[in-house]
Length: 182
Image (cartoon, rainbow, N blue to C red; front, side, top):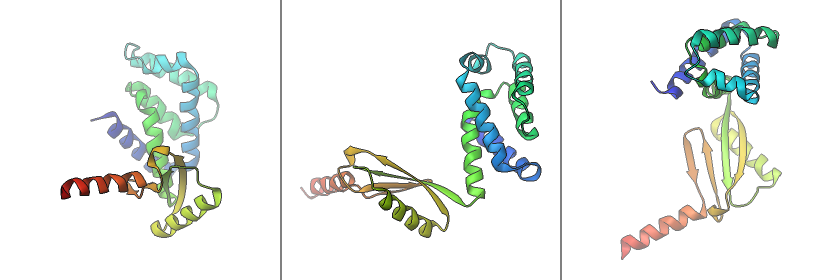
């Protein structure tokens, strides 16, 4: 099983338990905060991610760290201790992302990205967000990006769906049609 698949499984299990025993958004915030804390302390990160450090030592360090961090949701501390015990702390960044996606889905929110050749004005982004919300029947978190290579038009991604309306793609299609016609 790949790390991504394992992270998704842990995220799904954490989400299911959080629905019953905790606030899913609080769990997401605490888990994200903890991952960021580890990321900011390089020595800690090196110990947790080093396969040469024995799992029992990682678990002991995790238990000590959790005691110092202060109050944290029980489901989060149990998960962190379990990951340390199984030497799977390397999954944490992907696990957080997978858990975040589950929370957004649960709340009826979808992530979208629009890439254009030039920055879009805020009112244009708002109109695009509203149109995507109507099309998906969900709230949309829209992230605008800029890629001058597009020349014009836009590429919109919602989950795994990509709508490429860029001028660069249209020119590429014209090139292929011209080459086929010759």
